[in-house]
Length: 205
Image (cartoon, rainbow, N blue to C red):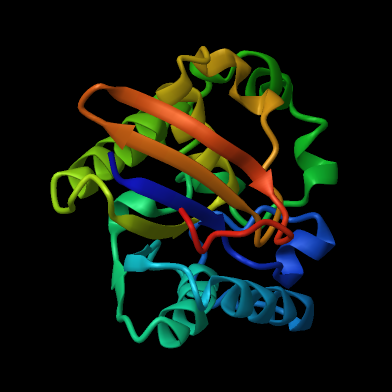
């Protein structure tokens, strides 16, 4: 079964300021994020990566680009890897959003949440899982693939493929520039690492 390196993009100023970026355009990595990407680039340079896919948003493409360069590959944007569409919550501060009644739903019963002018978590989970399933059909079972995405889509995918109920996906944690390793095949799926730091060896994956 193909092995996916699900990488959350590096840090940006919205993350540092406690704001939700959502799908807003023009949000780039900050200095810390660029440093994180360089560490990723160096660590993954010797990994036998077959292809690199990314959310089309700038911060994800900026994360994928240096990794692709070190592997002599091109980045393929895939809309299925996009951030959850949080609609009117884009650009809002967590401080403000935590005062809303819907915030508790997001944290404790996300299967019931419909973002205003956005999508549901169920829709987002269906989207990214369909995307990963589609990518498995494009590759051989021994291929190692990079998918650069965002925190919630990665957590939603992990929850689905390990059989964790949607309402519990917020118990997972995916930090900026972390790597989550997931195998997906016709006979099931395996979670090999979650929110992994960069101290492990990928050369034998």
